[in-house]
Length: 171
Image (tube, rainbow, N blue to C red; front, side):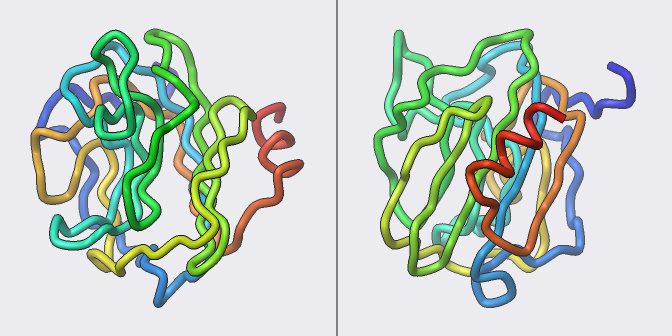
């Protein structure tokens, strides 16, 4: 996997990455991930999250049935303070996917899948969640994980412009 981290179950994760992505610390934030899925192992494939399970922290989903389904498989999405119907569709298996979530607390939030942009909400209201990040699964709910590999995770303390997301995809 050329240096990529593999994840294949509820105990596979990188936990307690000491970055607080909550809106008190980072009101505007962008998270960029390159991921390749091997399967749809469950109904909610969490790529990265600080959600404490009590409030809506910030999360990126490779697939999440709560955001809508196609043929029983959840769609690509993010948490922005509430659930919404993802228009990005079901992610392809065995193909590198570029997923970018852009949050602006109290403002617009968007998500990109291979440069295709979806407007999520005009007013994001995420809770702070944990003061650390977990990669590969939900920090609290072990049954919400990805079966795949992640080659890059980048966290920006600002909202990326659309053209910058395209530049990162093409780099």
